[in-house]
Length: 88
Image (cartoon, rainbow, N blue to C red; front, side):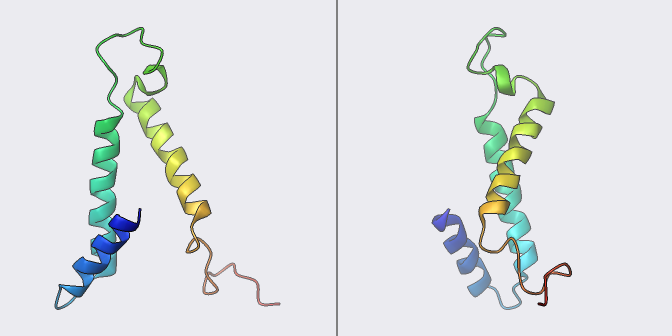
């Protein structure tokens, strides 16, 4: 994960007019493609190891579960500037 963050920071630093959202979206797209590539089921339709990723819908559900978990674990998930942040 640190390598991805450092790579994103290098991309921002090497650009005259960096757009953090564009860089982050590009990194995310690459990560999603690699994740999907790595979760392709094998050629055995009865393979137990591949059962949970044997359809596109199952892979998407697994991916979304992982993304949600990583978001919730991130120190950046909640910020003081969130609309629903408490002000007490």
